[in-house]
Image (cartoon, rainbow, N blue to C red; front, side):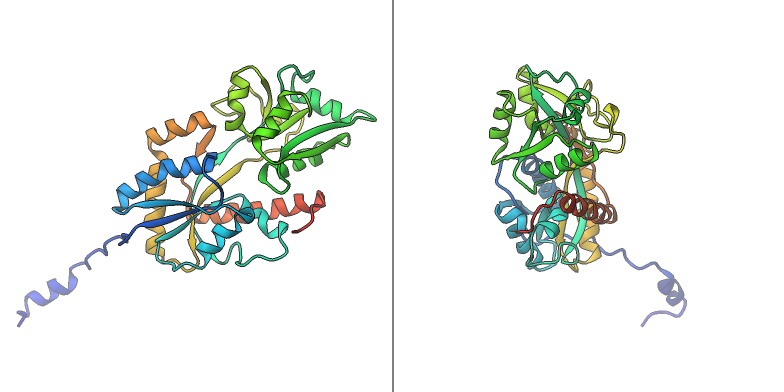
Length: 319
């Protein structure tokens, strides 16, 4: 029996803090594209650090195909227990406007965890191009009777839509967008002068810029980036309202318990602040973020609205 004198003190004692969630088996991190891109590289830098702090392996599983739909569906149908995660990207905001049907709801079927990073874009031209800066390119595309080609990778990608937005906001009536199947083909055509300029992820243009085969006309981010400090933004060169960036983050299936979401977010945010991670990402023109679940959800809503307008303006048909 408990003595009466001890009972009040026992009742007044604070409840023991609940232990944070921890996985009890390996975590699958599903990525909707093939290995080798900047997003895949980012995930592969983060995964070992996340595994170390959670005490379980984090296994990268590339599931390319159908604009990320295969990967997204895999996670949407998984148990919401924290053991299956998705590298959510800007394609989550474009897919609802590019496909007639999706086997999942792009917002309701997922639990936002954390934004990882922003990926900056660059507008580049051949080193021997007559366009010394973006203002010259814009002027050429606005000239009466002008016909110039601007390039990007496949229709409906974040890069293609960013270029379509640039064309629309800039009033570039004389510019036509030409798409290529791969980044390699796009940059080869740019270096050869087959197109006037191209929109690409900044990281993939760096070898051409540093090797003297490409000239960077602008970055599309709101401010200049550390990797290309001398390259002005689009906003600095006559289009003050233009600013776009690709992004990625982590999400789980819908109805993931808050304790799991909070633990994953806390660890990911800490990892993205680590000097070693930042030092590895900066040369890739990647800006670490580590945002909250609410911030990722707000970003997805805003981007979905933005790219819906761009897709409708560009008359891109649903597949």
